[in-house]
Image (tube, rainbow, N blue to C red; front, side, top):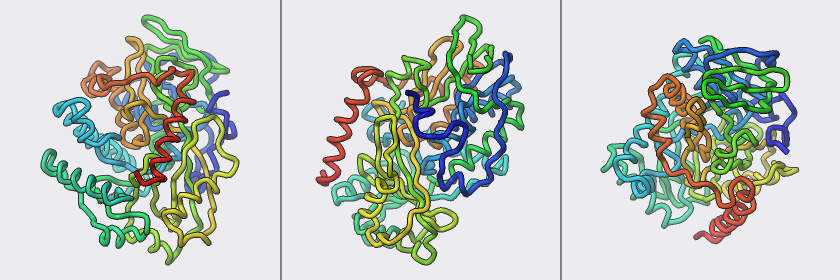
Length: 434
């Protein structure tokens, strides 16, 4: 079974509020026959589209293959949060890789936010980009940790994050579940599918060729050239970029052992009107401190977009709305009478260290994936870094490639049952408030 086809209609966007709130383009033609390119990109999400855009802007001949539609996967379904830094916070990174390398990663994280803002501005991508992401603490201990982190970031990195004690946080986010939090106005939130569609248009405008409905069935590696086969054609290219994230399937075992797909779920309520002030009093996004994170924000038409709950198999639950309604009502019990208009799932990918996995699989094959819930900035940046590495400028790519990237215990075969056990343990700790 392939996650590409487990939960969605072939060649169609999922039934999300995101897909319902944009003008979807006509499907692009599938690859037919054999074509030649400087670079073949597999995957039409943020990573692949960013790579194609930057390569085409540099004058290279690029062919991008997407099994479904551009922005079909996590890039068009996620919570839309453009966070600062990396998925792991700076104090963890400093312990993990040392101060100098951690500082490089912070700087790369700041560059990633700019790399999202840049094409939005240059290409006029209407993705409702707004500043502000809050982190919510569900216990006094976690709030003290948050406050200490804000002080650390100001002292060590000169980066300001506002600390909101309980009353101030409640004035922003009127939920009884939280004891305080942080507000990072350097982070942002956006409409993720609109961003992906805009990147696709920009890449095509620069000269990249995008083929949708072009499922890659095999790759033949060569010392100087790679052949990428689809159901009805093939691409012969000097370089290959694998940008598949949670939808890699069996295309590369080395990546599959280190990058694991998991499923996450989001609902969109009916428009809340005046009741939106019961959710948030400012137009910012929120993510909390749970191991399985709850994340939410208001849409531009006044709906609550709420993400919560994970699963680790191939199939989505039969009733996604019911799965997400439970954590939503734990955060906002007053919304028990609110209708849910849209519910959808998506597949992202995580790594053992919760850091992106960037690697050179062969002299002419690069890959990037495993953004672990921090993919809006990381993925757009990874595409640019791979485009630069193809052209011989690999400093940024090498900074990520040098990060520890252990395989999951049991490799690709046993990673899922072992992860389920681990996630169940951490979920229990969340419930007990530990």
